[in-house]
Length: 205
Image 1 (cartoon, helix red, strand yellow):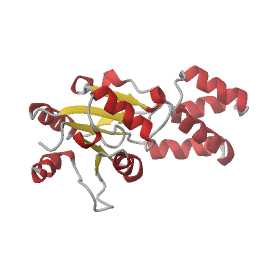
Image 2: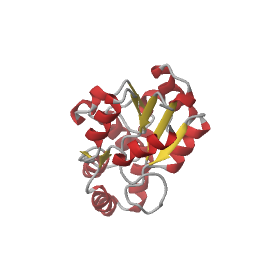
Image 3: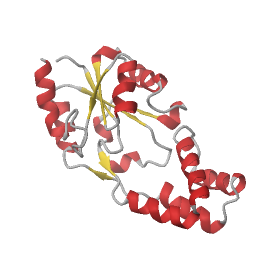
């Protein structure tokens, strides 16, 4: 095997967030353009902050003068999200484990993810969250943290994610290999399904 470990991104790589675009439009209409952008910037900062939901909503109320009504609208978009595993995830994780690969995860996410409820935590030898490290992909520090947890060198790992910039290019800057998963098929790069991962890995042998 060329790699000892396969490291995954989480959102839109292992799970989908159905209805998020529609919820975003509703929230934008409720808040207006200016306050919606404040909420967006706050949400992106939250990826690198180990802050509770209550404290984040309090921050919006105090720093941006969000009303109770506006706080609830922002919370509905920022927190109340449905996460659904893609159909190819369990098959792929089981196959990788059976083949002897170490499996890792690096995700840009706020501390609202209920990781244990996805039913896949047992597959992962190491998990690194952006809010834990204080930086997001493609920052090298988040990749270095995962490699340190796994006890592996960059060249021993393959990073798989849906973002060319954050996942693939970020991994390559660290000395890892990167593979894009393009489930939409729009880019025509990488693989369109995790079920193609075995073929990709076989070609490298």
